[in-house]
Length: 133
Image (spheres, rainbow, N blue to C red):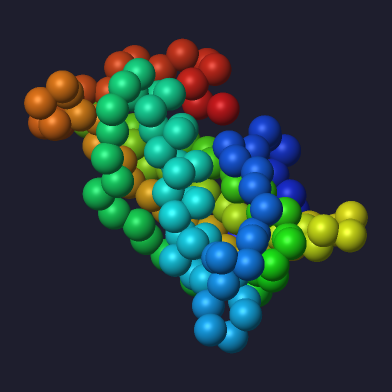
C-alpha cells in the first residue's frame, strides 16, 4: 500500500458530516465503505458502458480514523478486466478541513460484474485508453 497521493483524478470528493458518525464520534466505517463502493461503481459503469453490480470487496483494513468535517477523497483505478467482470482498486484519503496534508485511511479491491437489462452478466466492452484512467 502506497503512502503517495494518487496522480489520477478522484472519483468522488465529499465531506464527512455528523450524521455519519459511530457512537464514539468518529466517522462510521460503513459510511466510508459506501463511499468507496460509489466511487468504484462510478468507474465500473463508465467502463462497462452501463449497469454493473458489486460482487466482492477484498482487503479493506481501516488504517486511520476519519473525523467530522474531514474532506474525504476517493480514487478509483481499474486493475483488471475479465469477460464480464472488472476489478477496481479504491483508495480513501482524508484531509482535515483546516489542513493541507492528506493521509490514506484505507483501500480495497472491488469486483464488479457488468449486467444486461435483465440483470444478467454480460461482456465488458473493449476498453479505450480513456476508460482505464
